[in-house]
Length: 126
Image (cartoon, rainbow, N blue to C red; front, side):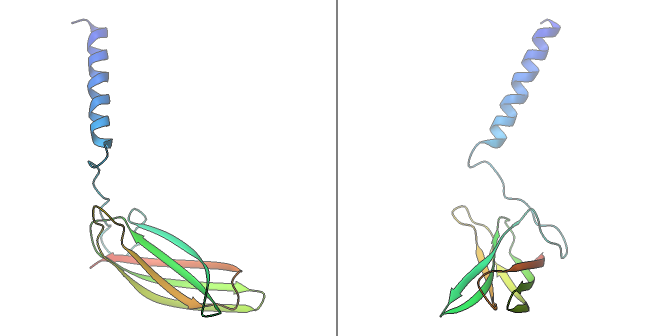
Protein backbone atom coordinates (compact mmCIF):
# COMPACT_ATOMS: atom_id res chain seq x y z
CA UNK A 1 0.00 0.00 0.00
CA UNK A 2 1.30 3.45 -0.85
CA UNK A 3 1.85 6.21 1.66
CA UNK A 4 -1.19 8.11 0.34
CA UNK A 5 -3.28 4.95 0.64
CA UNK A 6 -2.24 4.52 4.28
CA UNK A 7 -3.20 8.12 5.06
CA UNK A 8 -6.62 7.66 3.44
CA UNK A 9 -7.21 4.38 5.29
CA UNK A 10 -6.18 5.92 8.64
CA UNK A 11 -8.47 8.91 8.05
CA UNK A 12 -11.44 6.66 7.22
CA UNK A 13 -10.84 4.48 10.27
CA UNK A 14 -10.60 7.47 12.62
CA UNK A 15 -13.77 9.02 11.11
CA UNK A 16 -15.62 5.71 11.56
CA UNK A 17 -14.47 5.48 15.17
CA UNK A 18 -15.56 9.08 15.91
CA UNK A 19 -18.94 8.45 14.27
CA UNK A 20 -19.47 5.32 16.39
CA UNK A 21 -18.78 7.32 19.57
CA UNK A 22 -21.30 10.04 18.64
CA UNK A 23 -24.10 7.66 17.63
CA UNK A 24 -27.37 8.22 19.56
CA UNK A 25 -27.82 5.85 22.46
CA UNK A 26 -24.06 5.30 22.70
CA UNK A 27 -23.26 8.46 24.66
CA UNK A 28 -22.49 8.14 28.33
CA UNK A 29 -23.69 10.81 30.72
CA UNK A 30 -20.99 13.09 32.16
CA UNK A 31 -19.43 12.19 35.50
CA UNK A 32 -19.81 14.50 38.50
CA UNK A 33 -16.75 16.27 39.86
CA UNK A 34 -15.47 15.17 43.26
CA UNK A 35 -16.21 17.51 46.14
CA UNK A 36 -18.44 20.56 46.26
CA UNK A 37 -18.28 22.47 42.97
CA UNK A 38 -20.71 24.16 40.58
CA UNK A 39 -20.80 20.84 38.61
CA UNK A 40 -20.77 22.68 35.27
CA UNK A 41 -20.74 19.38 33.32
CA UNK A 42 -23.76 17.99 35.15
CA UNK A 43 -26.14 20.85 35.88
CA UNK A 44 -28.37 22.86 33.56
CA UNK A 45 -29.69 25.94 35.40
CA UNK A 46 -32.72 28.07 34.48
CA UNK A 47 -33.65 31.14 36.55
CA UNK A 48 -36.72 33.27 36.25
CA UNK A 49 -39.81 34.84 37.75
CA UNK A 50 -43.26 33.36 38.23
CA UNK A 51 -46.44 34.36 40.00
CA UNK A 52 -47.72 31.87 42.56
CA UNK A 53 -51.08 32.57 44.24
CA UNK A 54 -50.86 36.18 43.06
CA UNK A 55 -47.41 36.71 44.62
CA UNK A 56 -44.16 37.23 42.68
CA UNK A 57 -41.53 34.51 43.11
CA UNK A 58 -37.97 34.05 41.89
CA UNK A 59 -37.29 30.46 40.81
CA UNK A 60 -34.09 28.49 40.22
CA UNK A 61 -34.60 25.22 38.32
CA UNK A 62 -31.76 22.69 38.10
CA UNK A 63 -31.58 19.64 35.81
CA UNK A 64 -29.11 16.79 36.41
CA UNK A 65 -27.36 15.36 33.32
CA UNK A 66 -25.07 13.02 35.33
CA UNK A 67 -25.47 9.41 36.41
CA UNK A 68 -24.88 10.34 40.07
CA UNK A 69 -27.37 11.81 42.50
CA UNK A 70 -26.50 15.40 43.44
CA UNK A 71 -27.37 17.71 46.28
CA UNK A 72 -27.03 21.42 45.51
CA UNK A 73 -27.03 24.45 47.78
CA UNK A 74 -28.35 27.47 45.88
CA UNK A 75 -28.07 31.14 46.78
CA UNK A 76 -29.94 34.03 45.17
CA UNK A 77 -29.97 37.81 45.45
CA UNK A 78 -32.67 39.69 43.55
CA UNK A 79 -32.94 43.46 43.14
CA UNK A 80 -35.84 45.42 41.72
CA UNK A 81 -37.24 48.96 41.92
CA UNK A 82 -39.25 47.80 44.95
CA UNK A 83 -36.26 46.50 46.90
CA UNK A 84 -33.91 43.57 47.26
CA UNK A 85 -34.44 40.05 48.58
CA UNK A 86 -31.99 37.30 49.37
CA UNK A 87 -32.53 33.57 49.83
CA UNK A 88 -30.89 30.17 49.88
CA UNK A 89 -31.97 26.56 49.87
CA UNK A 90 -31.08 22.98 49.00
CA UNK A 91 -32.12 21.03 45.92
CA UNK A 92 -31.65 17.25 45.76
CA UNK A 93 -31.51 15.75 42.28
CA UNK A 94 -31.91 12.09 41.35
CA UNK A 95 -29.50 10.49 38.90
CA UNK A 96 -30.19 10.83 35.18
CA UNK A 97 -32.04 7.94 33.59
CA UNK A 98 -32.28 6.96 29.94
CA UNK A 99 -35.69 8.64 29.51
CA UNK A 100 -35.55 11.72 31.76
CA UNK A 101 -33.49 14.53 33.21
CA UNK A 102 -34.27 14.88 36.94
CA UNK A 103 -35.35 18.41 37.86
CA UNK A 104 -35.43 20.30 41.13
CA UNK A 105 -36.80 23.76 41.95
CA UNK A 106 -36.02 26.41 44.56
CA UNK A 107 -38.51 29.27 44.84
CA UNK A 108 -38.36 32.37 47.02
CA UNK A 109 -40.57 35.44 47.37
CA UNK A 110 -39.62 38.48 45.27
CA UNK A 111 -40.78 42.08 45.37
CA UNK A 112 -41.97 41.97 41.75
CA UNK A 113 -41.79 39.71 38.67
CA UNK A 114 -38.85 41.50 37.07
CA UNK A 115 -35.51 42.86 38.13
CA UNK A 116 -31.90 41.74 38.29
CA UNK A 117 -30.74 38.52 39.88
CA UNK A 118 -27.50 36.92 40.88
CA UNK A 119 -27.32 33.26 41.83
CA UNK A 120 -24.67 30.75 42.81
CA UNK A 121 -24.59 27.06 43.65
CA UNK A 122 -22.37 24.36 45.07
CA UNK A 123 -23.26 20.76 44.26
CA UNK A 124 -21.81 17.42 45.23
CA UNK A 125 -22.67 13.75 44.74
CA UNK A 126 -24.42 12.02 47.64
